[in-house]
Amino acid sequence: MSGTLHSFIQLAWRNMWRNPRRTLITLVVVSAGLWSILFFNAFLNAWMQSSKDATLKLLIGSGQIHAREYMDNPNIKTVMAPPGARLRAALERPEIAAWSARLVLPGVIQSEYKTRPVNIAGVDPATERRLSSIPAKIVRGRYLNGVDDDGVVLGLHMAKRLKTGLGRRVILMSQNADGTVSEQSFTVVGLFDANQKTEDFYVFTGRAADQRFLHLNAEISEIAFAVPNDADLDPVLTRLRAAAPQLDVRSWRQLSTYLAATDSMMRGVIYIWLAVVFSMMAIGIVNTQLMAVFERLHEFGLLRALGMTPRRVLMMVSLESLFLIGVGCLVGMALAALTIWGLRGGIDLSAFAKGLELVQGGQVLFPKFDLASFVVFPLLIWLLGILVALWPASRAAKASPVEAMRHAT
Amino acid sequence: MSNIVSCRNVSKVFGHADLAVQALQGINLDIHAGDFATLAGPSGSGKTTLLNMIGALDTPSSGEVVIDGQPLARLTAAQLSEIRLHKVGFVFQAYNLIPVLSARENIEFVLELQGVPGAERKERALNALADVALEGLADRRPAQMSGGQQQRVAVARALVSRPAIVLADEPTANLDSKTSEELIALMYRLNQERGTTFVIGTHDPGVMAHSKRHIQLLDGRIDGDGQG
Image (cartoon, rainbow over the protein chains, first blue to last red):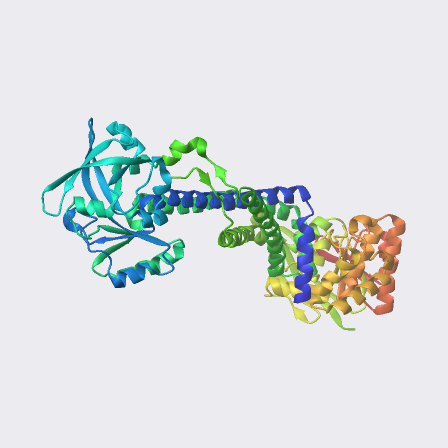
């Protein structure tokens, strides 16, 4: 049987090149289709990564911990104690690159001209620098110096709305622990440039200064943490929930449902694209193989006359499809790998910066070589391609030896 | 003398109802081992249909065909393939070699289907090429050979599997008279030296001149069967 298989492989390979033009057209269809799937997948992954980096690194992190009622009703009554030894130990595990305890409560900010609702975030600048990109986004003035720093950092858009600026004073108001409203003047020490939503909804001050302002001791309202490797996130969440069963531990998917929905949609889009591309490829493959079979119907009849069983004819023609699609897949993989390698420096989309902000995308995308995609997609195309090519192959297997004799005489 | 092929009351009808054509009508025929028989008759007399029945390429509408002791009735397509592979060799009018294979590979192909091991396969293929005086053209593809050379390769391919019978349908129709004469002489020599059984469908008087047995068909019936 191995001798026969070797002979069939040899015959199928030579048959594949009998009509080089048609074979090349099919190879171009398969390789271009697979290239588009692999590159599109890398592009969308890069986009998603960029969106996640742009959004999660601002404030959200990979996940957050709150008191149970906080997410439904964030107020002075839904704060929590700082992390105990058990939770702190879980937060110090190597899977978590950084974590930061914050006091974030709703309040009001007032300038000489305007009053705006806002979330007043009391932060620890040292831990925030490791977790959040806000400290690096200061464009005027400075970031906070420590937990006792009673300066305030505003977003550029908020400063513009309030018609205030660096060195000016603003009033922050919020309900305090005594049930009354605290009101205090803070100096604007820095302005940050992030997306408009963050700029409009958050102002930052030192955490201890914020606690004093709200008549709290060491209470906080949230702990944000960063897990660099996505695969570690679920186990980390499990450990944190075990360490603090009384608290509400959520992943970024629960905290930013828009981003999570975008992530799922992009994963869906690649499979829709796969289906579209494969449908076109399938038409090309079936068309080519049917033409090849009809042209050689006489020859298949001859093979049947010589004693080849229908099953062996089916196998031989399927081998031709296997080679044809396999070579196309290899070429497509090589082209996609070269394209991704060529774009390793990043795709600059700054010209579309405003639009990208709307969909939470970054301005420079970095497509990466993803081994799993380079295995799964070509294999899928290859197997599906062989499956659709079974139809022409079955036509060949049904070739009548009598027809061959009729052609011959 | 033992029978290689036996046909009993073989009839074949193509089409249905008013369009039915009776290609063969009650054929009774025995082909004996060592026969060098020609099957002659005008166009439409049923030569090719009868060769198809004898070669297990087609099955009769009624009657029975037995090849080398094996009745063909009720065999599946795959079983008929096996019969053709092991018991029948074919030589066609249009040579019908596989264009992407060399002369040797074309001959080896049948042996590969039979599962003959590689070394033996190659040796037998080269011997078969030597038998038809084409040992120097082993690596040529069909397109690189003349019609006569291709037909000799086809004869070598038909013989290499050591079949019980070789069927040739108008083997000289595409050849000039000299090449036809050489081909028939070759087949006749192989029949004489090895006892290979040949049945040749033909119009060619040169072919009929060599035959030891002449079967004449007319309107799907045997009109004569005698010494050539």
